[in-house]
Length: 238
Image (cartoon, rainbow, N blue to C red; front, side):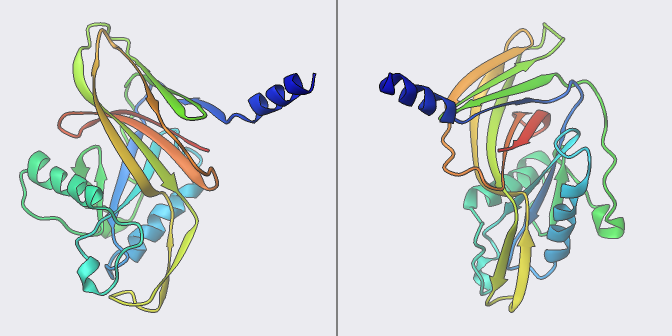
């Protein structure tokens, strides 16, 4: 009886989570930023303010990618990763055919959102059918399912799995933001990508995915095409 009780208790402690998108498109709002950039704190603050919007994760998902190329200015960004810098460079060189990057930069649906610099208003988002993206997270495995009403849809795509974290307050000791406390939310801590195929309007994949802690964290899954254009996304607090 003791063994059965212990097994039952352990089973109840297994972490599981299920969530899914609506049929309408859930749009990514990507911010490329750096703690070493004096122009970035207002953009970081604006992104943090989106926590209070009622349709958070329902129609949009904020993501802050910290880049590395300003680390030489005296302060090494505590969240920066080269893969995030490369993601921004990919947009610039491969998608837009440009040869420069900058911070802060907002990217929405693989397009620059420059209007933020003049008005800082929330961007207009298109509400259109995009299919349903369902996520099932059970302990160390994540199952991803996508269904589209167009059963003739066959497409090479990329599944992206991102772990975000909120509620950071970082004291900057050097660089352009010296002696400032910077607050950060929706910080991308990890991003992994997998090339897959949508066949007959359906996609199902399972991956090993370990999460050590669940405090203040957000799990984001989004599907994009080979040119970086987003197809559908889904997110939830853990």
